[in-house]
Amino acid sequence: MQEQRQHLWQAAIKWPMYAVAVMPALVAAGWLLGPGRTAWRLQPQQLALFLLAAVLLLAWENLCNDYFDAQTGIDLHKPHSLIQLTGTPRVVFAGAQLCFLLGLLLMAQAAMASSWWLLVLVLAACCCGYLYQGPPFRWGYRGLGEPLCWLAFGPLATAAALVGLGTPAPGSGGGGPLDPVLASQLGCGPALATTLVLFCSHFHQVEDDLAHGKRSPVQRLGTARAAALVPWFVALVLLAEAIPVVWGAWPPTALLAMASLPVAVPLIRCLGRYHNQPDRIRQSKFLALRFQMVNGVLFTCGLALGGLTVSS
Image 1 (cartoon, helix red, strand yellow):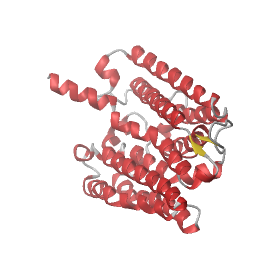
Image 2: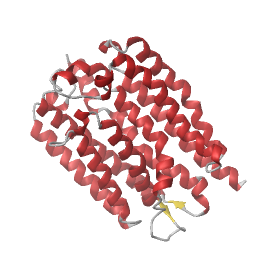
Image 3: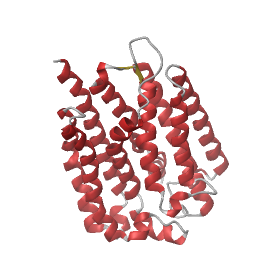
Image 4: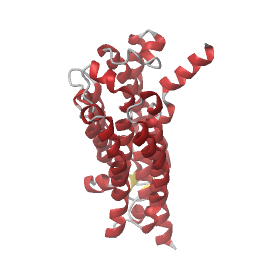
């Protein structure tokens, strides 16, 4: 019994999911070390501050998600929900607000050393998170969670990281480049991989979603058609990271991200075969998360190595 409860707590904390929080900052750091190094410099202390704040803000979103889902009853058959484990929804909600406050304070400290645009962009990303789950909006229940996820973890978070981590010259202020086009290009592929994690999280809970009025894309499409979209998701991630290399905007080393394709194969096969068997696809989101992590790290390393190639 104790071992089972420990397993439930590990599932509730969802520590592997925090890879999605740190990825925008890692990608921005890779660009600042690579193609952007001629004009901008990476600030290591800012990177550490940004990563910690991003983790706290994602913790806020996850805790709020458990709290708001408990209000609708959609997590009734989810034993690893923190609400189910603790039986204290108010404490969970208070913990969420504490994480939010601490995360914003750290982001404000980073903004003081760079640009206040950082805080504006982070707040916009947090608004996307609230629109997804919070009343009276609950846009995730209308099938809009995936676009909100891409926007928050793509252009907004990547733009915030570029502004917060870069500085025009060593020791100078002013922040990094506020460039929405660059942020959208850099963040597009990694954010699609993050969105794939959310998309795959719906497969095993279609019946519960339907019973509580949540019209996720998987519930709307049906599991068979939704599973058929997963290879296209993966292809779009890789294309978004490869096309700028073809254009000459990024160094050829960024193609290192293509090596993440084999990591997506188990996910594609699992959903292709068992899309309508909840017990067999319950872990599909973690297969998607593994692809997201490997792809993001390889992409970051490819960008950073591009700077070494130019220097040599």
